[in-house]
Length: 485
Image 1 (cartoon, rainbow, N blue to C red):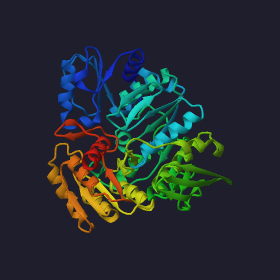
Image 2 (tube, rainbow, N blue to C red):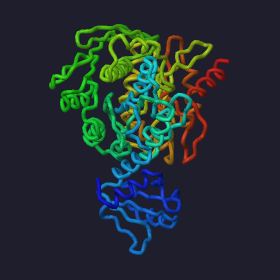
Image 3 (tube, helix red, strand yellow):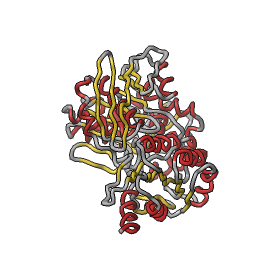
Image 4 (cartoon, rainbow, N blue to C red):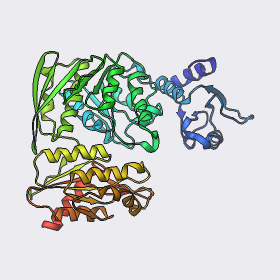
């Protein structure tokens, strides 16, 4: 993207001129970039920015503009790409000596990011993490409102991390962010795909579009020579490996990609309620890990982290710090309690994630599994009965409740999910999430496991646009006290 007008603007932004994408935040003389997501309201947003005194406006090729506006006009083929270039110029992102790792996939992103953070820190790196739980680096923790923040905000965070001495950034990279080019202007040194299962069909509409959005991280964004890794046990991971013969595959099932990719092979030697033992083989070298993480899905997450690490210069002897990793908040998080009840909180909110986390608890040898779950409002409705079916297939008792209903009626969401419970062994319904958790605790027997799924680390319940304080971990602890004293 070039041209005298844009280059002039790029130079001014590089000298400190501020850029806005929210018309309400524009100050006199600043740059307003009209993003493609503006849709039918583009004219309103542009008018609002001009009324606030925008000195420059950046718009797409066909965007109508007022004929009498005094602001400088810059037309570009793609305003999302233009914003990335402006952000890179303003924050001098590519001058920052930081290695950037992108983690993408439907499930496992957060766990893999945490694993990489712990491993790389133990190896002497100064690591920053951007993801679902928080944006953080040594000395700073910022609550996350998006898995991958907006483009300008993303570059701002990179700048702050660089100033703090961060040398490695691990970033959860969502399909929305890739499709919307929020990562424009960044260069990735490594990328990994954990899996691809049903989620976000309200946005992507079909699996092919969803896959192509994820694929952007590997084949479109700068540094095509980046280290690439993908899960060969996942059909879409296997497809990705066939498209990139230089990518490293990882497998627990002995998968053999047709492209002849290098492979990191894992053998799940032991899986118990207290953890797992994993044996790895790569390029003729073998090593083992004992981990307190539970379940085959976490064995795959451990392989994903190691597949990235091997590609950025670490060797098998460097992997042992992974053994001390205790878990991610809200990811199969054991709720400590004086009654020694086996109760876990997990962020699982897709059919595949529910299957994986329940299967992990099943394989660990518990007598019964009780699963509390709900479905989010104003999100992909087609996955609701599929989530319920996943619970019906795995749990001895399915407890259907509310999650984050947002602007939907919780009872209507429950009604959408209910058909999937037709084959469930036992069903409990209660739209009050705390009451449902309390009832689940009350029916536990010795040897049972209770899974509270869906919200994980979230400290709120989102109802009619309002965040009401609610923590599943705290709710479980309170329920134990009330039910069992």
